[in-house]
Length: 296
Image 1 (cartoon, rainbow, N blue to C red):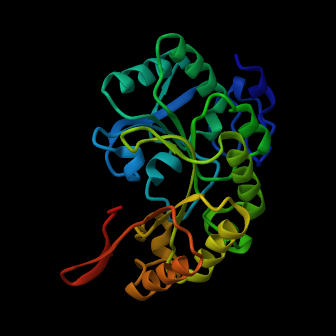
Image 2: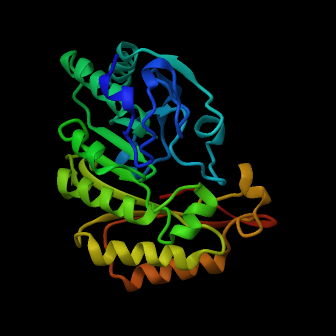
């Protein structure tokens, strides 16, 4: 039993439910770790996937309810299997034994307490590769502080600069203020990005942002905040892979991919900010329709 789950306040929703007796709050999770997929992922940023792949562990459920989530079967519908903390530790070791570059914890927030225990066990058995915290950005400062010494690389989203948009499409309050404060804490904790001799990330923060159709201003304001508030050497990853799925198909503003014009406008604005570190996915046309291929 994990005592803090008696009154769960791991994320900013502060539900206060007792997950140890199977009460569930916003994230729909009890005290057991639930994992949907363990994989060798080749389509992260180059410094994460490298030539061998990133050791992803996709956790089930989420503390956001994004209408456009591309992994909605996992995040919203709870697809996955409950496992023990000991089994999670074994998975970390198995990923390392596959010669993968890192352990990539995808949507880990709601299982932070279990993950820390699993890392302790795995490290006692030889886990040594970097651990990446791949998050939606909606994090409590206290939870991020508790991860010091456990996490080498933070990979947070900064989805929205506008809280009304965040409420409309992710059903969450005060996203911008909460996410930006969490990102500041992440940066304070692990510092600037560092790479090994093969160009693989060892520590630091990379902020991700997904461009949404019809919301170029949202993207510009996210990038502007990063430029004005984070160190000059901050790494940013601008993603253009959006496509309408899940509930986004019924949203007039989200029911298409982004256009070439939107892509060019964002890219031009990014250049005006003078950011030198990071990635932007390339735009490519495919036969009869414009689409984005995730090439970094």
